Length: 268
Image (tube, rainbow, N blue to C red; front, side, top):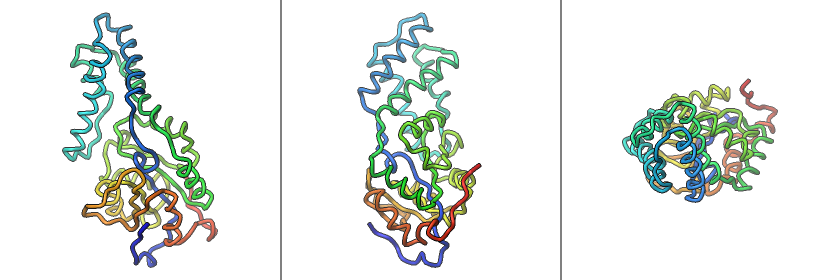
């Protein structure tokens, strides 16, 4: 764990915003979960399309991986505008001959999302760290770049046991813009009712997380728990190997709010 000097003149940290994937969880999707989801998707399409549906592996390649490629390309091109996932799925399915009604598109998206949900797990130490920070009086929230639909993401947070510790959750799929665009950080701060100067941001990416949060005025912590980015123009205020190292960093930035009889008000 490393931390930069010179933060003593700044106000104490009272609030924390976290990235989601590769910060709180290892964000991935297993092939087993993907096949299970697309077996159900294939059956759903067959029930309404009245035409032959591609075999399972072909459907996965043309739909799941097709959507993945579109999302990956938009990130590779540096776009800050988030994709509209229903439009992406509608266009992808239409491209292979299926013009499906909105309710079926919604069902397909939910089934596709389930492949992610079933592949997610939170390490016990992560939950324990959030529990301890919550008990210390920190107001906590989440800011995530993700094309997946926000209501499905919030269901994941609930199932993973993270919801009780997150007073505000903001996804690029609901704001329409991705980190490092300041709008998504500002929306999270608004919902958390916290100022940038009293907030720390914890993430795994230098450009999106560290650079974006610094530009808004937050202190930044780079985590190496799931990924290790080290080379970039943005320099974090601190680097941690594991989320459980975070309380030590925060102690150097003013200590727990509850120890001073202060907490940041939650969103109403």
